[in-house]
Image (cartoon, rainbow, N blue to C red; front, side):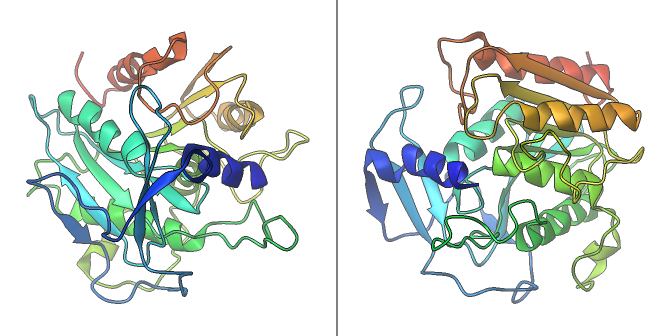
Amino acid sequence: MRLWVIALCGLLACSGVHAKTTVWQPAAGHTQIPIWPGTPPDAQPMPGAESMKTGHKLFGGKPITGVYNVSRPTMTVYAPTGKNTGAAVVVFPGGGFEGLAIDLEGTEVCDWLTSEGITCVLLKYRVPSVPYDWHCDCRPDDFAISAPSLEDAQRTLRLVRLHARDWRIDPRKVGVIGFSAGGFLVAETSTQFKHRLYAPVDAADKESARPDFALAIYPGHLAFDNDTLNPNVKVSRDTPPTFLLQAEDDYVDGVNQSLVYYAALAKAHVPAEMHLYAHGGHAFGLRPGKFPISGWPKLAMAWLQTIGVVPH
């Protein structure tokens, strides 16, 4: 979808950016962990070296930092700051599979989750991940499985379960949350977990890649304009319980993304909760805004309590 690229441009390039020569690094006390012991499967050449760019325009009083040309995916583990609930969430930042909004939809999400007693695992997955043809101004298949990023997501879920005891995580309470393109990655992990995309590497790949619960925030790529579900997102009774959030004035992906996916979940009798708001647009993350939609984290925590992931 060209709109995704335009949205990313609006967040960063179109508002002016400060380019940095160094790659993104987490805050002091946290370390990026490579998720592959060597070259990742299906590695593709990148258009350049990994880079980090911060926009001039402020969103919720702060700029947004994007990460680009990620060829070596990593995960960063953030331990709970309060009482440990045993739950863990893998975070997929958005960015149209062209980049990653690493703070707005990444580290800031981890700040929220860890304050609620949840271990947060921030995945810096490979981007660009879905080819884009600038000559035709379209993607070859805008609804295709984003193989490299999905491989990274599956591998990360397995690694979290492998290290569950060391990280004080309940391996039966490992979920995912994603925003925009990351929301599509949430749906992919929720429906493609039986589809092994890469050859097993080590003991981690004996673990399950199925999320125990999923949160898709203003997701994309899930529905065609005729309100038909993306055929690559095969919802079944084994799809995990899902939380959906979107604004009706989201003109980047469109509210039909959540509506169509929710209908498929309901038809398959998958427990799901959907929240639609009149205003909010797209790519608002957790930053406070003037519309009620900015209070969605409280709804998400109430849902996690309802399905038994965290205590009341």
